[in-house]
Image (cartoon, rainbow, N blue to C red; front, top):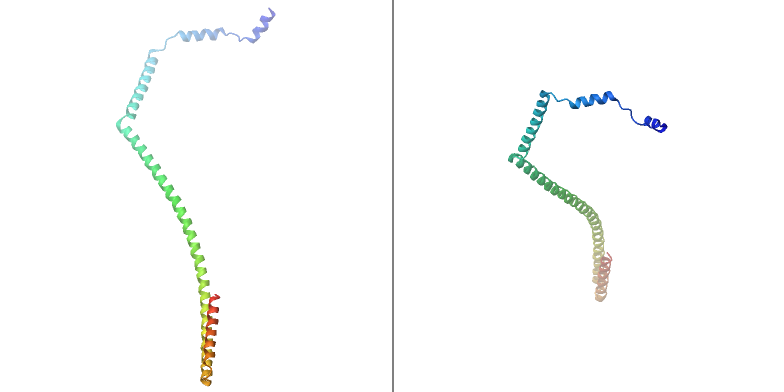
Length: 170
């Protein structure tokens, strides 16, 4: 018996008043006006649901959804084309930068070559002047001594060889 008393502490006590009031409410009927109101609300909700289901499946709505889908597809296609165009633009900009750098390098090389050409033209003018001076000197010598014609030709051949050698050392 002691165990039953000890166990009774752990079992929830039964409230007889509360139990009797709940059974009284379950046994009662809803008022008629409340039932009609709930029925009216249910019918209204069902009617609204049917109305919106019919509208959602109407031709205009379906056509609108189809047009929206097509628009999204076109938009995605245009977006892909834009992305490709931007990638191509970046590629072409990189190529243009490479070309600009090549142009700068070529201009620098051209300036160096032009300076070298001017330098060589100066040397050539100097050599031409030396040749003219030598020819003039040799003419004077040949006029003075007409007997040694072979040395003049040898000297001129020697000078031409020197000029050609200097020009080839470029």
